[in-house]
Image (cartoon, rainbow, N blue to C red; front, top):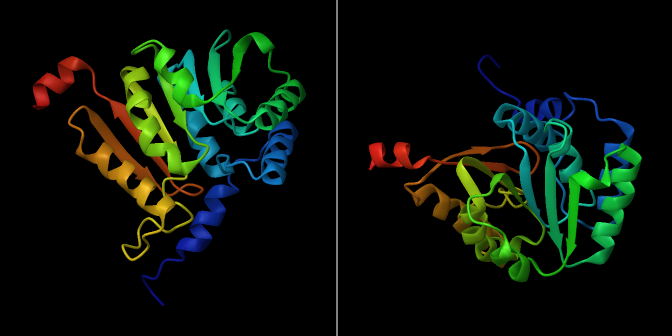
Length: 221
């Protein structure tokens, strides 16, 4: 029928548009085996574009996605860039180390911190990071959000992976704890005067939020 759009076909095409190197595909496979949330190929490609466009040199990943998020970030961050990844589960970080070795990423570019994010994030410096990638346990997203925003430099980018919660967030009838938490994080970011946000349907949803520089914020308030 004229004018009809096959959104599923579009989504599948977009997810498969950028071929993945073996090391990244293997990391994603380990994530699936461990039941670890990780950016999809489409979301990962978008993360790479953002890291390249912002010339990010310092990033934080909240929830170690078995190396998937780290590899996507460092594929387009400049030489010497550093990603700090925090996760309580040692198995997630062990898988990440294996993925990083396979990808040929120097250990000096990655800080893996095996600890509770609630204990580590408050000790990281204010406004010191170009990108914060929020992943891991979605039930913790609301608790991690204040630190995630605080860590960003002015004009830094917050990426919230899984922002559609398996497609449940758009359905107002869905009120399970994960869906409610993720939905509220989106609403909270949308309501902030110091953030410019967009929802992208890549993967399971990638919410992109740019922290306005103080001069921009002053002009818009």
